[in-house]
Length: 307
Ligand SMILES: [Zn+2]
Image (cartoon, rainbow, N blue to C red):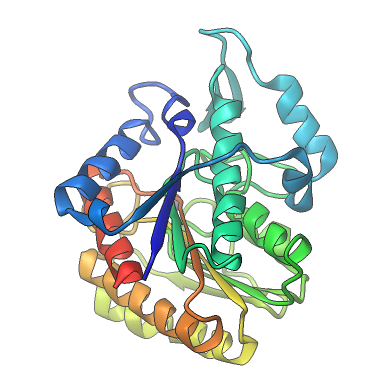
């Protein structure tokens, strides 16, 4: 099955400093591991276009998008803080535009039958960015922009977003909650940053808070509700917020997942995509900061998509 890796060299240029865990080396490690695994022979690769303003405004408030453009530094060495953890330097806006554009490109490829599925290997990540806010390393909400593009531009009626990052996809929930066309399933360590998701939510949101120390076998049991919800919803396209910071080697979180758990979850999602949407999946990188574990997990995830 064709899988296209959609990325951009612009995503490597956003640099929040050597001490910051969300760093360009994440991209280099993933690329190296894809080549070392030999997967590059079976994958297709596409260079992302920058997201259009009209695409960003499907998921974000116009005034918020304008404020990001207005505040973005244009000179080398200049920096602004969007929150305590999220910095923009002169190359950050362009990286963020290509990260979101990768997802709309991936949606086009998959819905126009040019690729069965796609993995957007991009940064900055997106799932903490809300309708009118950037936070938690995220500038724009890449996956929400892609989901809205599938609904508004391609005219789909139902899409599902499955988020297995160690952190709650609070930004994505903020954007899609109440939209009957979107099912959002998120699992996350709780209580933990961003300290949301455990409260009762509207229909269409399936949150699974996980205690610190959750193992792979416990995880598999806890997220069963997702699959029931997807079965009832019957999505026409499945998006994955693929964050690998729940890996046991990742010090940002305290879950105990390993590559075989990411293989398992990808297999479950793929089976649902085969059943309801001709296998169409758009997966988007979110977190993952233990560089070796991140790269191995991405390759394991993409391998399942490709088989
Ligand atoms: Zn995360």
